[in-house]
Amino acid sequence: MSHAAFFHQPSETVRFYVPVGTGQVGASVSRATLHHCFRPGSQDEDPLETFEAFSAELALAVQRRVAQGALEPVMLREFDLRPEQHQK
Image (tube, rainbow, N blue to C red; front, top):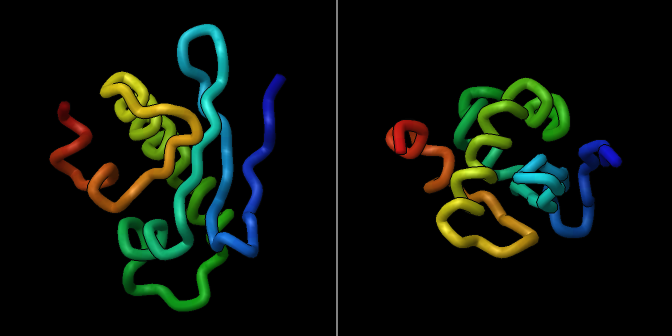
């Protein structure tokens, strides 16, 4: 069963699911993290649009965190999305 990503207003996060192994892992990323990592020069961007544009990269970051032992729900941080993290 696939769950669509959505913006959770009270926490200012995009919440989504990523396939890991035979299941799915719940994860989230804050509006601020999306802005700073992917669209620092823009103003008033839609966090769901930013998420969709970079969803493959975000999914890989969740999978890396799970492989490192993170438990669900995985909260992505700016550190998880740094370019040097993509090569590990």
